[in-house]
Length: 76
Image (cartoon, rainbow, N blue to C red; front, side, top):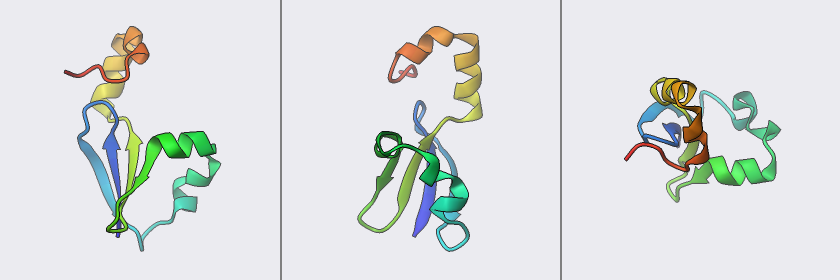
């Protein structure tokens, strides 16, 4: 089982953590509201947890073009 973090915009994998190395509590997932957890986290049937985040490249793009925050996806 792994925790796989990927960018919500470009869908590139940011990183993968073995589940035995960290916990949801160490990642701070417990601090998210139920709605945020449902929006950002998905569990695969093989036990992997997929967490949506934002990569550095997309973060820089959003800083340069704040109007992109209105779009669910800005990379075509």
